[in-house]
Image (spheres, helix red, strand yellow):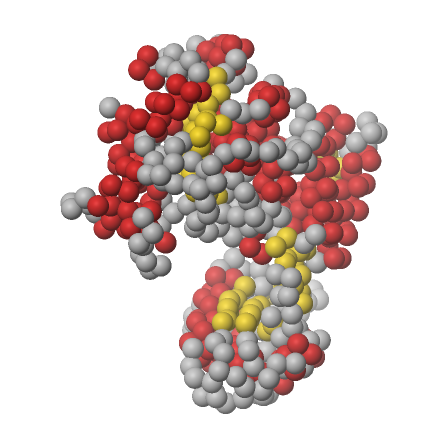
Length: 553
C-alpha cells in the first residue's frame, strides 16, 4: 500500500477567464491609501464549489492511473519519484520478476491517491507506482520546477509501498488484513470518553455542545472501521439535533450507556483490529426471512453460500405485548407499535440464526422483512422516532459485533408475497387453516406446503433465554450481557442442508425466466460462476415471491 499526495491542489486549477472575479478580495490598507484588489486566477480555499471542481480533476487522474496500470509491464517510462516507492523491506524481499498475476486497486480521496497491490515481483510494484504518478502528472503537470506530487511527504515514506500504512487516518495492515483508527486519534477518543463518563457522576458538570459535537463526529469517523458502532449512535444524534448549550450526562442515562459501549468497542478494536472482510457486504452465506403479526412472529432460515439446516421457527407474543400494540392502534397511549414488533421479530430471527448457522468471521447474511421501517432501521442501524426500536437496534448491533459478521444485507419483501413466513407467524389461531397446536403439527404443515428435495424442515424452538432477551428489550430494560456469548448449545439436527423442492422445479419449467432457470441450476449444483445468481443477492427472495403464495393456496 502507498499514498501519494498532491500539494497546493486547488491552486493548480486555473479559473476560466472571467470567473476569476468570484475570488476577488480587498487587501487591508491604511486610511487614505488607494484600495488594492487581489484577483486570484486559480481555485481558492473556502469556496464551496472548489472541492467538486478539484475532485473532478483528481478522479480523472485516477482513471488515467487505472488505464496505465492495465498496460503491459515495462511499457511506461520510470517516473522521477519511483525510487521513493521501492524502499520498503517487504518490496525488496520480492523477486525481481515472475510470471504471477498482478492484482491492484487505485482510488483517490480529494488530493490523496491510494494505491494497493498484491504483487509477486518488484517489477509489478514499480509498474503500479509509475502508473499512479504518471497518471497524476497527466492531469497535473509540473510547472516551472514545481511538481504536483509532494516530495516532502515522499521523503517521509508516505509513497513507499509497505504492508503497514496510515491512510486517511486509519492504519491498514496488509499482512493481517485489518483496519483500525490511528493510535493517536484512538487514544484521544478513549481519554475524552473516559473523562465524560466520570463527569456523569457530577450533577454540575456539563459538556460544551461544540466539544460534544466535534468528538461525536470523530467517533462516527472511527466507526467506519467498526460498522456495528453505528447502532450506538442514536442517542448522540438526538442530542446533536437538539443542539443544547451544554450536555448533562447525569440527566440522560441512555446517552451515558451508549458512550460507555462506544468506549468498549474502541478499546476492543485496539486489542483486536477489525478484519477488512468484516467491513464489506457480499453474496449471502445465510438467508433469513421473517414476518411478525399481532399474534406472533415466525420465520425461516436457509443456507445460500454455506450449508445450513433448513429451519422454521415461531414465537407467540404474550398478552401484555398484544395489549400495548392494540392501545397504539386504537390511538391510545401504548408503548409498542406494529413496527416495533417487526423489529423485535428481526432481532429474534438473528438470535435464532446464531444458534442454527455456523458464522465465520466476515460471514455475509441477508435478512428479509415485509416492514419498510424495519428494513430502513436495520440498514442504517439508527432510528429517530421509536425508543423501543432504538433499543432493539442497539441489541442487534452488539450481537453483530460479537459474531464479527459483515454488515447485514437487509431487503424488503412485499407482504402478499411473504406467505412462507406468514404461516408460522399466524399459526396460533388467527388463521384457522394454519393453526398448529404443537411444533410437530407446524412441521407437518410446512413439509406439505414447502417440501425439500432430500431432507425435511427442522422446527427450532427459541430457548427461554432468547425469549426473555427479546421481552426485556421490549420492556426497555437494560442490555447487560448482550455483548457476551452464551455457553455453546449442543444441536442434534441433520448435517446435510437442502433447499425447497418447489424452487428446484421452477428452474426446470420450459417457460421459466433466465433468472429462474439460473436459480434452479444453482440449487441443483449445475449453476455457473458467471450466472445471474452469483451476482444477484435477491434470487432466493424472488423465488419465494413467485411460488410461495401459490403453494399456500
